Amino acid sequence: MKLTSRHLLGLDGMAKEELALILDTAVSFREVLDRPIKKVPPLQGKTVVNLFFESSTRTRISFELAERRLSADVVNFTTAASSVSKGETLKDTARNIEAMKIDMVVIRHAAPGSAHFLTRVVDANVINAGDGTHEHPTQGLLDMYTLREKFGTLEGLRVCIVGDISHSRVARSNIFGLTTMGAKVSVCGPATLIPKDIEQLGVKVYHRLDGIIPEVDVLNVLRIQLERQKSGLFPSLREYHRFFGVTKEKVSKAPKPITIMHPGPINRDVELSADLADSEHSVILQQVTNGVAIRMAVLYLLGTTN
Ligand code: CP
Image (cartoon, rainbow, N blue to C red; front, side):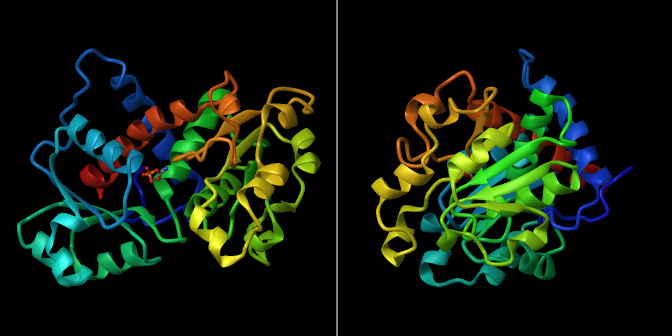
């Protein structure tokens, strides 16, 4: 089996079999990461460009490591050190880079749809590393991988995504991927940060953490985007923490331990208490490790069969 598209733009509309193919392929690459020599040859001779127009720690480093572990040649692009700072457009930037004979492009950009746009202007395989509020498909995949690793299956798993759902590409990719794989997904947050018709995506909505904590296996806690406070979507960080901050005390009310996830970067003691982030119930660093294996799987599947 192979993926139906030459690109990975989002998890919306991907078939269960395709998602399972990526997760299964990542299992063997996860094993490579534990070897003394963490390198395999499938992308030898291929050139991958990482186009990052927005800041990133985890995703950028994870993609670069995944590419190098697969023996690809890697070129990194960041806005500040490029001709974008002189006004060059995304289209011109991408076409000039492709003229240097590259095979794959990984793009992060603040504009939703930028990865789709790129597929219309270059022939290379395009991988979306986060486009505005739209999708972050490899984050959704690494979250699913981490949960499948811990629970054995995603079928019937009760996952609640907590926080600013309206502005979160992580939430959207998780919702699309997890519901397709049979998980029971809910969202929890202030009404101002949850899209009005989100139930149409197959999720339940909660506005109180104490209402959902007894009902779930997993809380995936989103970063509260501090810049949103200025737009009046929630009164203060202190108030947000009081009602929606996930803490040891709040999760202790659950009948059994809840697994804690966070895509990073964490605002410690705002959306998630520092002690819970560092506790034995947190899989946050496993998410980061598994991210390299997931990105290796995606690069491998697109670069060798599509
Ligand atoms: N999870 C995530 O996308 O983190 P970065 O912004 O550091 O890449």
